Length: 103
Length: 455
Image (cartoon, each protein chain N blue to C red):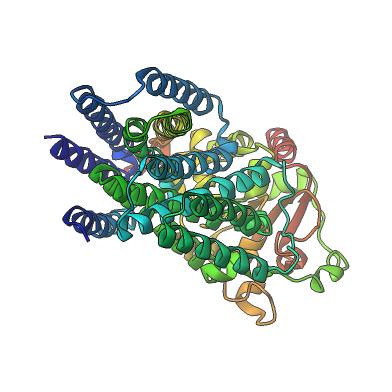
């Protein structure tokens, strides 16, 4: 196995553990925006898609590259935008009863 | 330098996800993650510009613009009740993109691939393809294009097992003989498996399916990263893979079922369903409900999928406002699998301007029901079924549920007396302390509100 591949596996395993540790602490109330935000991050495959477009030649490779870039970009832009839209709505609204508690 | 920039992108993803651990910091976290993405894309483009490649820039830019427009359109247009469908679709796009990256690597390779590359290519192709088709079946079910009930495939799990085995063999042939066609066969079989595996799964199990496909879309990206040796893909994909897995396991625990049993086993009672509706219930009118609510001191609202279907989140909030104006304490109890994806109800209530500190988890809510005057169940059924606690013969026995039957009065707003997804009768409905208020959730709550105002 190549060194590059071994390093890749190491990074994969360590990043998975970091992901586990962090995500386990996300409160349930944020699970939907967490998923759509994670979706956007999985759009990182856009980088692979751009690189893949540069790898091959010929019509077939070009079509694959174009489709990959487009699908990944839908994820990136759509995912981050809709997550922002959702998170904007999560508010802690001060209530009267709380301010009256001191009476 | 490029590698370090990818590392920076990975770190920004991690910092961004860490922001998600609190509603106060979540929005900033999401923006930090998006900066990480921008860094990764810009670095990639700059890196390619400095190389002499066969890259057709028009196609890349065209794909990016098309994707950005479609993504922005979907994100801005989507209704909060449709969020599970959108997330399902995005999972599919992500998995599809990763499979395409691996496919491009297959097409581009002219030499015999080393074994590890062949393995990761196979994984990226097949996991990506399963994610793509599985997500679109899930989308179809959530959107109502495909029947959302449980369906039974001829041969059941055996058929899926056979397709999976055939895909593994095809990928093996591809690796051994370096056969491009064998890879395509494996990919096609995986795509078929995505359809046959998700099609039989019922609507109420969608939280688990969507979470798992979310995880797959991340793993597919990571495998594609291993194929092309890109750290940003490996890190980003691994984070998403872990996130999806955490949610999948959490959903399974909330249903007291194992992930394989949700994916592969039949579930629910058909025999019990015959007796449903034969016992007398306390039918209540809008006025009855208004009176019960008006003289309560504490009210807990329990939302379910019916609330999303009826788009009743604003009606719930209006009623809660009227109760709070009367000095009644109103909170919300949310079961982890209420709705069609993790956190579905929380987003709907947030949209209706419900303060997130009023949303109680299962563990926070259950000790409170004994001291609660009125519980208002809106469009939920199986997650408030006491049979899960006390009927060992029930298919959902052992599933953690909201113990709403302990409240002095329970009002159940429901379309009809039909069984829930599981096809299981709910003893809650026949209790003396339960009022059954039949009707569309939105209309029913609006009527209750006007009755309350006329008291």
